[in-house]
Structure formats: structure tokens, C-alpha cells
Amino acid sequence: MSKGSKGASRLSAFRVAFPRTLPVLAGYLALGAAFGLMLSSIGLGPLWAVFMSIIIYAGSGQFLAVTLIASQASLPQVALLTFLLNFRHFFYGLSMISRYKDAGLRKGYLIFAMTDETYALLAGGVPPARVDATDYYFAVSLLDHLYWIGGSFIGAAAGHLITFDTTGVDFAMPALFVVLAVEQWQSSSKHAPALFGLCFGIVSLLIFGADLFLIPALVAIAAALLLARRKLEDKPVADASADEQKAKEVTPP
Image (cartoon, rainbow, N blue to C red; front, side, top):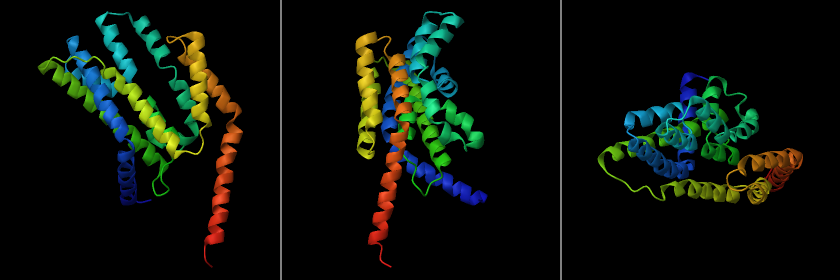
């Protein structure tokens, strides 16, 4: 593929990715702004907000970082809490190995940019046939990253100029996940993964409580998906074969 063709393919990937990332744009501008406001409240300005969003890029981790910085937590404490908070990304990475295997030099950034919302978009959607899959994954990841950086800067800059009451702003995160979940449910014929997540999440919440339910729920969901993997993968193949057969029947000679 020539350089011109590669450039056109990547531009096409961004055109396809942008409308699909609009729910993330809305959520990240609000959440990023909330982070920027919190960072401003402890005396760190917009440049620090942008720097942290570029280098760390972990929404919940950055909110935690504000609290740890304000309390002057030790480095071991920071490392332990950050690891526990982001342990769920271990499961995200396992499910994306096959998709990222041909990413080349961009694989490192794709792994780094794997946030909850980016994972939801990539794992729940299929790149259009006319767009290179790696270009699409990279476009979605980069756009989401830029949204977060922009929201962080806006919030931190506004925090130096205006006093905000940020009560309730954190609800943008669950609202964003609801939008993504509904969109994926409507666009996919396979609802078993979502039902696994709902059932095991509720059971884990009832058993372990709100502070400890996440990791047990993720382990149970991962185990259930591994056990049901063959059935989940066989169904799309069968559906695709049926669609191809129907197409042959209706296609004129």
C-alpha cells in the first residue's frame, strides 16, 4: 500500500470513528472537566491537568491521584491503590490480544489508551469492511484520549477563573456507561456477555459489598465467557453462512 493510500485509509478510519465516539466525547468533557476542577482545587493548574491526562490517562486513577496528592500519600500506597483500582484492565487486555496482534508500532499506544469507554467501543463494535481494523482501533483510541485531555484542560482552566459546585458531576460516568451499554445491546445479536456481566455483577455486589465486588465479578465473568467461548463464536459463523446462502438465493444470475 502506498503512502497516499495509507493516509487515505487512516483519514477514513477517523471519519468512521468520530460519530461512534460522540457518547464518549460528551462523557469525557464532563468527567475531564471535573478532574480539572478537582486538580485546580489543590493548587495545580491547567498544565498539570494536561500533563497528567497525557501521561497517566486513567480517569478513576487520576481522580484517585488528586486525593493521594492532597493527602501526601507515600509511593508504595500510591502504587498499591492504583494497581487495585486498575486491575480490571488485565481482563480487558486478554480479550484484545487477537485484535491487536497486527498493530505493529501502534500496539504500545493502543494498550496504553485502553480505558473503560474505549474498550466498550472496540470490544462491542466491528470496524466497517472498508476501513483497516488497526486504523479504526487507533482512531477510536486517539480521539477518546484527545477528548479527555480537552476536558481536563477546560476544567482546570475554569477552576482558576470561576468557583464551581461539582456536586453530581461524577454521575456522568455511569450515565456514559448506560448509553454505551444500550447502544451495544441494540447493535449486537449476542446478549450473553451483557447478561453474564449483569448477573455476576449483582451476585458479587450482594456477597462482597460495594467496595469489594468488582474483582470477583470480573473473574466470574471472564470464567463464564471462557467456558461459553465456543458457543458464542460458533453462532456468528453459522449466522454468516446463513446470510451468505440467502444472498446466493436472491442474487440473479
